[in-house]
Length: 181
Image 1 (cartoon, helix red, strand yellow):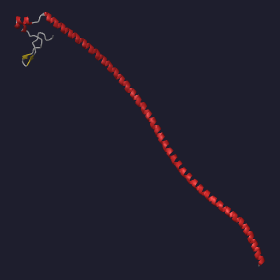
Image 2 (image 1 turned 30 degrees about the vertical axis):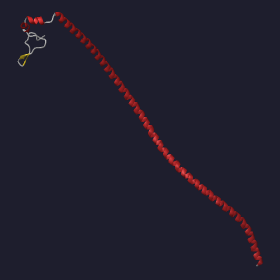
Image 3 (image 1 turned 60 degrees about the vertical axis):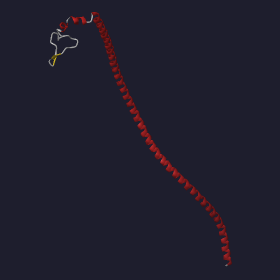
Image 4 (image 1 turned 120 degrees about the horizontal axis):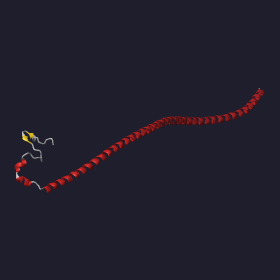
């Protein structure tokens, strides 16, 4: 509206006409023939009514898009809040799982210590078993030696009994020898 009454803009020395706008004097130069070629008012009214309906449809579409845009923004905000809640929940779960993992690692370490201690006890038991087998073999050997010694002792005892008989016989022989002398 501020351009009313001003000369049309120029481009490289030529005048530029805005589409749909008429310059002064264009209508007068056309004469009566131009007036006859203008559409009748009924057509213009129909055209305006169609354009008005299109504008109203565009307004409804714009309003629908606008409300959809608002709904999408609200959904985006709600989703962002949900994402923050989920991230917080995930962090708490990760913290909790980290704590449980540490507890399990401590238990595993203690179990490994117990296993090592058990291995040393197992080695000690195996060594004690070997020593026990060695002692059992020594015992059997000693038992066999005792049996042999007992048999020899019995033999010696019987020989000792025979010695007293032989001693008595020897004494008798010595006395007889002396008498014979």
